[in-house]
Image (cartoon, rainbow over all chains, first blue to last red; front, top):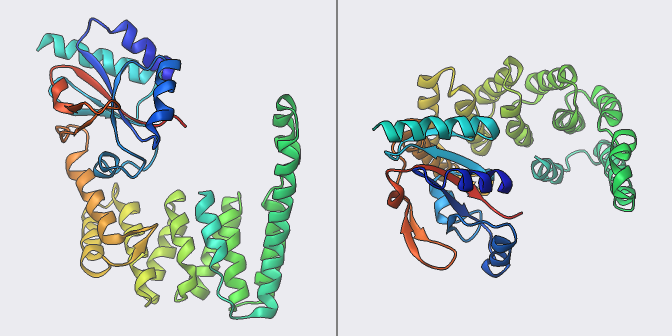
Length: 99
Length: 237
């Protein structure tokens, strides 16, 4: 997932696009060096662990779980990956720019 | 799935010690074979591990026939029930599994100990599973089993029979809210499911998230309104 996310962040830097994580690693001190190592530059909510308040509210039962939201904040896709994720993002960016 | 199976293995009711020992013996043989394999696997160089997995990994199917023999010998008894439960949880053959589910439905639907089988049913959403759950609902009077069966049927009919599923969910909330379901109560479980259905479906505006980033800086999901957002629940594991 990281390489795909890195390339999205890089290729879409000038587009109305963001990756927002909800991270469930219990130990922030172990996580920080991993962010540097993997060049994870996108922002994450830190949710304490897999039973954190955000994952609980969103009824997340498996990781990763991915939602794609449009520029109006509407949920448009869930658990898409690879080329399907790319196509979904491309479509929604076109909608955002046409709006 | 592994943890479900492990949990199920631990809750055999000791009603019939002489015959249960033989169900337990077969289980122990399989577990010992697995343990021995993983020991060997861990000492095998990485390049050779895939071949080892293909050729030497113990298959539960090698133990299914023994379990079915035990079931045959003990028709209507606890040993039959426990042997069939193991087969349903472990067999890779849909035919064998379905035959075992049908015997369990016909002979043991009222038994409290069939609860672990209910957890496996959503993985096999076919008419055999549906018949099993409906038979359990008709015949079983244990609140835990009835509650979990009602919830399982609701999940399995949500796409095909949404009106029936909704009625079942309401019944779970009214009658079985206190029943334990995978470490939570069924009441909390259905509340979360309903929130997901009502607020997290495709086309709904995402509920806002307010929280802190890894450096402790507060922000909101709605700060990113105007942008396409990939919201990724992740962990570095």
